[in-house]
Length: 163
Image (tube, rainbow, N blue to C red; front, side, top):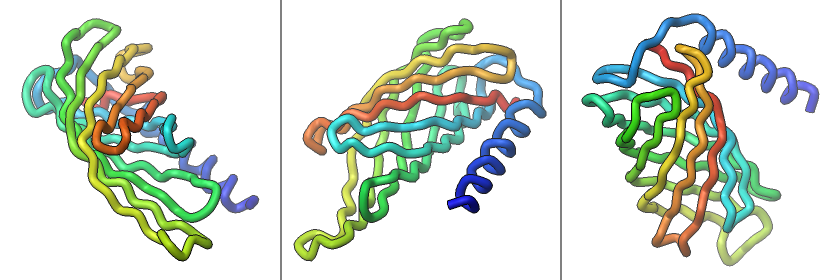
């Protein structure tokens, strides 16, 4: 338990060092952003940590793959998403829509009927970025997975503008 806390502080310290060590500019082609977020599933009550790397293919359009480690009461769970984001605004408050594909994996304990769940999903959603400084911002996102009983995921986190 103590080791887990030390690893969490080391990870958070590393993320903060990365966030504070580079310069940035607007959301244009070839820009890169790094996101760290907490994610919560409303339908399944799963909470987790999320890392996103975002790369702008062209102005206002980015590719944002992400990995999420979820913490169920028993077992293990993770998710991988491959989303495209289109930004409607370029000011300090940036609104975007997203669409993509996700993979959800969960290993259950003590359930002989279902011990592993692996399913794909379509992601549809929207988000807002609030630019605090030139390099750092806050991110809120809501995502819906229509074919998975309409599961809704909320995400709140920080981002760093790498270049």
